[in-house]
Length: 149
Image (cartoon, rainbow, N blue to C red; front, side):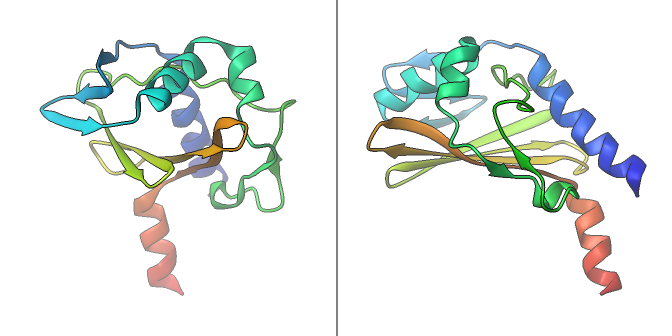
C-alpha cells in the first residue's frame, strides 16, 4: 500500500517535471482534436502559472489538503509545494480535459492505463486566478478499496 502511494506521488511529480508545448489561439487552448473555449485572462494566468515559479507560489490558495493521496491530515503549503510545469501528453500517455464552470476551470489529467488521475481546480477570485484544489489519485486502487468496504 505504501509503495502504491509512493508510486502515485512519483507519477505526479514526473508528470509535472516535463515541459511540453501548449498551443494558444485567441482564447482557446488546442488539445488534440478537441477545442475548449477559455477566458483569455485564464489562458494568460495558466501560461504564466506554469512558466514562473514565484508567480505560481503566489497564486496557489494555500494550504491545500493531501487527503486523497493517502496522507490524511497533511496539507500542501509553500514550503513543501512541488512546482507544476506545463502539461505534456508524453507521446499520448496522458490526456487532459479542461472544463470551464462559471468562474472556475477544472483540469483533469488521466494516464492511458487508468493508474493515475490528477484534478486541479482554478478559480477567479477577487485578487485574480488561483489554484484552489489539487488532487492526485489512483482510480483503479480507489475502486478496489470501495469494493472491499
